[in-house]
Length: 126
Length: 357
Image 1 (tube, rainbow over the protein chains, first blue to last red):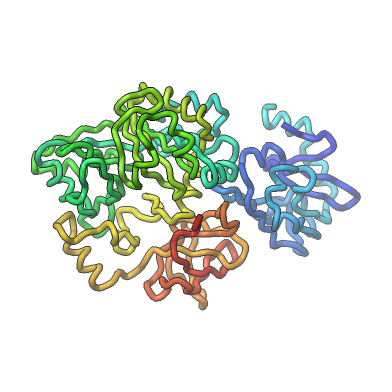
Image 2 (image 1 turned 90 degrees about the vertical axis):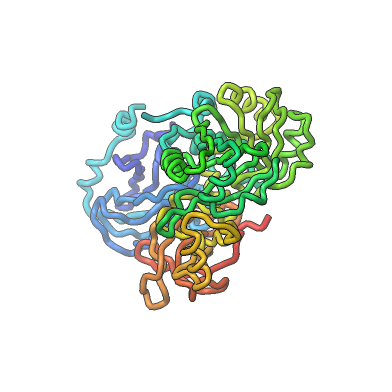
C-alpha cells in the first residue's frame, strides 16, 4: 500500500499536502481500495468557509456513499473538476490526479495535529 | 452464524472481497465491479450464487400446491421448461419471487431467494393441504450462473449437449464439466444470456474450475446488482417485498387470473381498478446517483414516492433507478425529481430495459 512520506493524513483516510497556506486534499490509497470503483465525487462547497471535520462533499462507489470531512478549517478554494468526468482517477492515482479540493486553511495549529505517514501506517496496522 | 458456500475458500484464494449477504459469506467483487460488469456484457463471467434456496415439490398433487401459491400459471410448464413467478401473500404483497422448473411429470424445483428460504418454506408448507411432498435441498445444492454473450461458445466443450439448442427458460439434465445429471438452465439475472448450473455441493468445485479454465471470469455480487438493474429486473427486498403487490411492481405478466391462487381475487380487482402506485424505471437527466430510500419528488418539491434501487449504470454512464410513483407519473417521458442530499435532481421515466445491448 502506498503511503507517501511527504504527506499528512487523517483518521478518516484523507491525505493533506501543505504548500504555504494552501492544503490539497484527497483520499488515501487504502481508502480508494476499500471503496472500490469510484463513480462519482460531489463537492458543492467551493467558496464556502467550513470548520474542521465538517462535510465538504461526497464520494460514491458503486455500492456505497461516503461523506468527505474537511481535514483543516478554512475556505474551499478549488475542486478538481476533472473528477466530474473521470472519478476513476481517485482509484488509479489517489495522490496525484485524484486530488479532490484545495483549502486556504485558517488555523495553522490544526496542521500540527494531522497524522504523519508513520502515524497513519500505525493506524492501518500496516 | 455466517454460512459459507462450497466455494468460499476458492473465492478467498482468488482475492475476492467477501461480505455478509443473506446470512452467507459471499464474494462482492474480485477485480472491480466495472471490469466484472463489462466482462459479462461482452464476454463470459461466472457467479457463485449457491446461497439461493432450492425446494423440491413432488407427487401427484405437486402441481396443485404450486398453482395455489404461485401467481404464474404452472400448468403451462412442460418437462424441461422453467417459469418466473411469485408467491403472493394474503395482504396484497409478495412473499418472494422465484423460478419454477418442471423436472419430471410430477417433480418441480422451486428456486427462491437466500434471504427468504425459511419464510418461503413455512409459507408454502402452511398452504400444503393437498399432500404434496416437499424437500428443502438448499443446504445440499450449489448454483453457478455462467453469463455473457460468449457463454455458449466458451462452455460448449464442457458438455455433450448442444448448448445453443437450449432455448431461453428451458433446461436439460445432463453432463457438464465431467459431472453427470446437473441441471443446465438457459436462465439468468444479467440480460446478457448464458446458463445457470445446479449441482451438488460436492461437485461444484470441479465445475467452477473447468468453467474458469474455459475462459469465464469470476464475478461478484456487486456486478450482479448493476447487471440486473440495467435490465430492470426486480430484486426482492428492494423493489418488491411483503408490502408491494405484483400488479404495482409491473409483474402483471406473471400474474395469471386463469386460475385461483393466494389473494388472486383482490389482485384481479387491483388490476381492473389500476394500482395506486407503479414501479417505474428512470434515468437522471443530470449528474448524480439515485440510491435505495431516496425520495422521489414532483416539481413543487412534494414527495411522491421513493427509490427502491439505484446505481451508476456502468454501460450507460449515468444514474439509473427504480422506484414507486403515482400512475400519473408512470408514463415513459414523465418528469420526476430525485432528492439527492440537498438537491432535487431531474429524472425522466423510461421504458425498460435501460441496457439495450
